[in-house]
Length: 113
Length: 110
Image 1 (tube, rainbow over the protein chains, first blue to last red):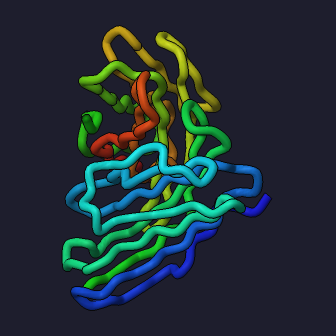
Image 2 (image 1 turned 135 degrees about the vertical axis):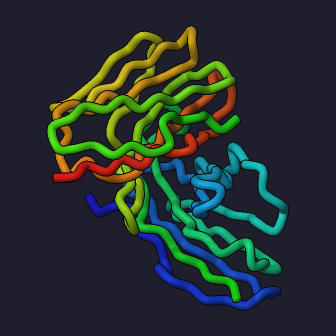
């Protein structure tokens, strides 16, 4: 099976812009979670989608949003970018919503100037 | 709600053993362990679903003490390939939020 793929891999934006990141889960996986990783804060949970519904949301401002399509692909959007949004954004897929292994994609590295 | 890991960093010589601990203030449903090498995505090591459960493969094993809300990862006869940052990930009994621990940097010197 192909692994989790994320596009783009690298992105440079300026403050105030918005960005959309994409994640394609492993075939058959219906749960997609998004994480932000920074040197200072470590891995932080953003949100989780299962069958096109947001099941859980982390403690991030409303500028961070996401959605999931019927084919389980997911997108994450960040509006009005801030310098502090510079991070590695990881998505992970699993076959269920809890107690299951999460498989991570390679991540999208976002730099906000 | 982020689990706390200890130690924060450890340096070993090849062949030495290490224990990494993960503690949560919340009741846990499961504990996952991941290893992340520099510049790479986290890679799954193992998952523990029941209190008291112990799992392992080769020289890496883990235990889960549900009552104490703690998990420990044991690495024996370490190899340089074990180097990386180890994260525990925890799920609560209610809800599906997943929290990663603070991370433990492990360096094995040949």
